[in-house]
Image 1 (spheres, rainbow, N blue to C red):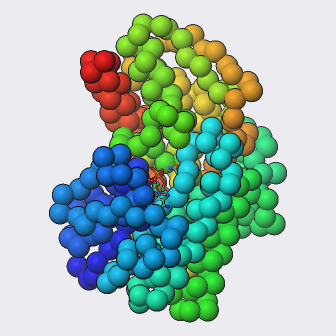
Image 2 (cartoon, rainbow, N blue to C red):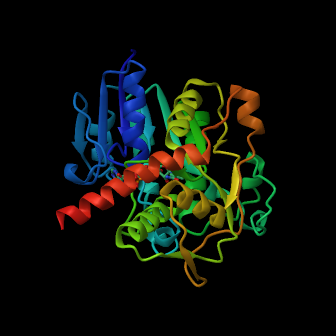
Image 3 (cartoon, rainbow, N blue to C red):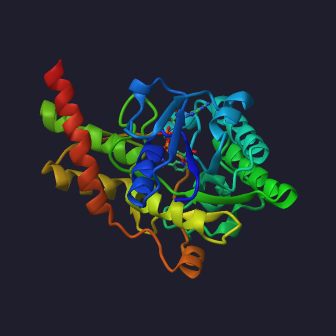
Length: 327
Ligand code: NAD
């Protein structure tokens, strides 16, 4: 395979899975970089150059991009709604990561650069109903994204665009919609809804409590993309001639109550639902319009929520059971 690949944020959820996928596709010269100590990485791959660096620093970005052909930037200080609504400055400081990585990539002659944006760039006034019209790429403007996290993503998308226009750097940008799967955060405050619900159901089953706390009234809607679709889409977008930011998400819209129904069914449980109405809950409804990706790639994420959650629940419930056993 041509050249070294950098996976920035390689100790994180999506980065860890992307490395597996790239290796399956024959990429054998991979550098993974993350700021966390290596014993906190979700996956540490043998045969990969694993480095602990703070990519907010330009010097660290120069080291990370040295002799690299492809950069996948998945590094960001982020989490679910509970994190991004209460850590806006930290989320915005991820601007340093993408800015310095772009500068260093340009200096070091990197050939291709991928940036992981988010559906949080979309204007809030287009997401006020549960029966939403799916968001198409043009809906990001006029801009009124998620405060903090979404503004950083939108700014960084534009930075990629201008590095392409002004310096000729090959950049690709995908807007992920809620990614879930094993080997990611499921507690501690950074977890997202699917992992949090799997953990809560698993805990109810293990502790025989029969109750579950749900953030909001459970009627808010979302789509959720299984990690295998996400990494496949990332590489397809990197390989494509799609220069503008593009949605990468599932179009299977469900309410949070329906998400809980599915996890309960997988776990063989029926729990008493307690709604925490003042908890962080994000926009009222959001779905991915996949017209563009279908047109340009002839493909869209298609792994069903039922199938993806079965794998995710199996992993999270095994983690919880092991934690109980370990005391
Ligand atoms: P994650 O938190 O599991 O992974 C991000 C990784 O970046 C973490 O391991 C973190 O330690 C690392 N990181 C943070 N600051 C760093 C720094 N200064 N230097 C080096 N590494 C640093 O999150 P994820 O779910 O894997 O998300 C990956 C990317 O996808 C992020 O850019 C995120 O904003 C984006 N995204 C994710 C989702 C989702 O649902 N998971 C949705 C939209 C966008």
